[in-house]
Image (cartoon, rainbow, N blue to C red; front, side):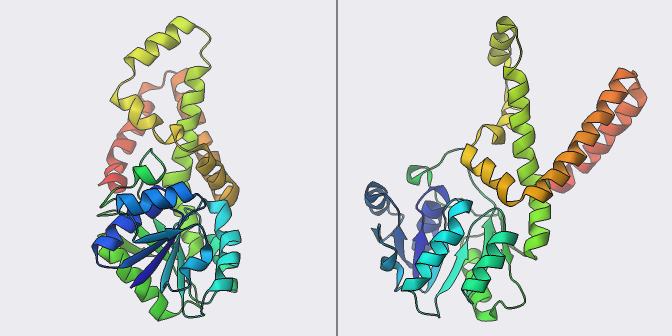
Length: 279
């Protein structure tokens, strides 16, 4: 197939690698001419341009831009396309995107490949980034079945694990396992850097090991992405943050009252619950 990728960063570049390896012809579009040249040189795409009109021959187009740009770019993009073109996105919030996009384009499928690294940009792209990771598709009542099947087949070619759900259910779920952890991790880092004793801070930095790296990683990621999560999934994120705050208050209360037995029960509960989310 002729496949377009609009936005040649980590996700777009990685999609290009894997779909090109499957024999598809990949047409890339980026705002920066230098990124276009890099993508061709690295082998992420077969051809690239800074002009959206370059995608008019694509049968399927992946929009891989930041969340806030998806709808504005879609509005520009569709002026160049035949009505048969299938468009999908990779945004981590689905409800507002899908609602607007499906009103603009009949063959739009909301998508969210749940894979990534701490790095960004075309040089961070890697092969098999999506293999064995979740890829969520969020069809609605008006979604054309052939369009859904086409995007689903491409996601399967990436080696991803496919899930279907409504945009609303998607946003509730990712608020717990993706967006809340970003805010919690950022709060952890803020708490550490607010320590007043520089000697303590310097020693903590030297002692920080795998446990701290694991819990702080997502809080040290792309600030723009974190803001977009909060802006576009605001209500679900607030709900999860408020529940998290309630649980923190409960833990503080147990420790203040030296109720070690109840604290142990809480930690035993979380120990048993974790594998259901991580294995």
